[in-house]
Length: 272
Image 1: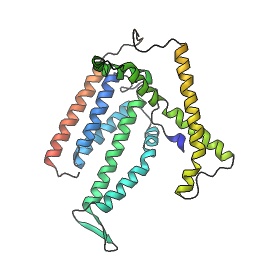
Image 2: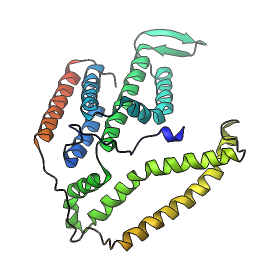
Image 3: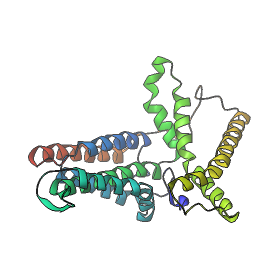
Image 4: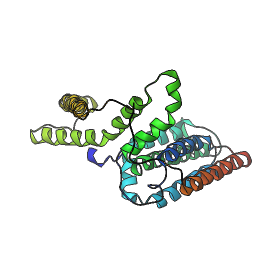
């Protein structure tokens, strides 16, 4: 179901990751995403997988929520795996279909490697929103993008737009699920038929969704205006961001992981 998508939601808890500085979490998340694409064999990717497991343990986010975050990309995982299995050649040939399509050792290794990489990427990205409130995420983005003020870029407005877009993903998902249930109650068939028929069945969903989204945006803008919101000029913050020992420990772990990835990439066979 659409409501099973949990990307963009915040999970309240008192964990080590929740207590970290939001700026450090943002920087380390992007750094670890880069490290994922630096992995070229199973050993270096195993380091990233181990780092992800440790992060999940310290975040205290239920595994069920993380599995829900992976669910929307299952189609991409399967599609990518099939392409790699049948179109990547090299190594030992396991078997051949119709004397044309062959499944080789390199194709299977590449498919498994790519699937693990995507899963690790999704889980790490989801942990950022699960452990950081939208307010702290906005403040962190604004602080990190503050050097752009030299070029007269409205950093606060940019950070607010990005955070609001992320914040309303769960709201839009709930809205889609509500509209789909309403259409099904009126006799709409959304789950049977060919691809073209299903695409046409989605039109009665997208139209009320767009109307609802514009109405929600107008209401939000009106509420911000009524509360005298004027942007970041002269704005103060109730909670001040400070780097603590947890942040430096996490930074040290990330640096060790990066060093391990570089060493393992050098001494073991490259997969991708």
